[in-house]
Image 1: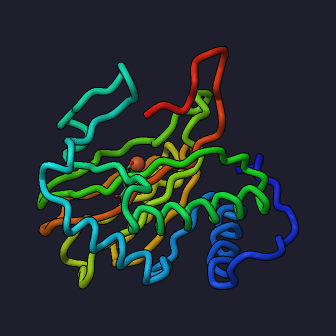
Image 2: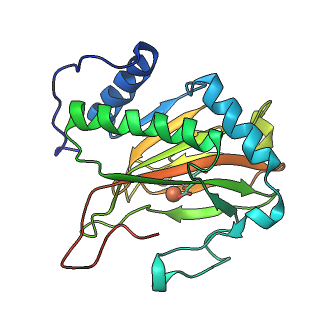
Length: 224
Ligand SMILES: O=C(O)CCC(=O)C(=O)O
Ligand SMILES: [Fe+2]
């Protein structure tokens, strides 16, 4: 977190976005993560929600870990299913336009050098989980910033399915985030181990990652 540089307020852009983006930038600067309840603009949550609910089982693939040739499915680690988001749909465009504005804002304010973004819908069936993990490993600088938004209307505390964000490697207690509709969580991918606890009902979300550019030689990065 010490590497973050805070720059003065930027000019221009959409005021509503800027209010939330400023809060997220402040949180990231001071603590490395941001948890903003019911913060995603309603038109975006609603577009994503509608698209996700319309996805049939065939659109999803079982989630795994690793990339490219290293990809493995492992039930021991996670049992959710995912569907990548593209600009092919209006919902995708709305979401990716918002994340692109967030990317520009954070690059200006915190000098993060975010270069690209990828994201997917995730569905956790009742009982599904994602064990404690990091989204990126130190030294393999690729995923820099993780973003998760939840799409669960009328979620109650007894439904479970919390995201547990641990402050560091040693933390065993963590911060529990209830996956309420429109809640936005952003955190530095290399800093915070986290896990998804099983829920008693279907749990819907969008998860995404901003990357820095680490293309070496002719190997184009980032691939999927
Ligand atoms: O859904 C969540 O709360 C977090 C998901 C997650 O950790 C991931 O997809 O890497
Ligand atoms: Fe994660």
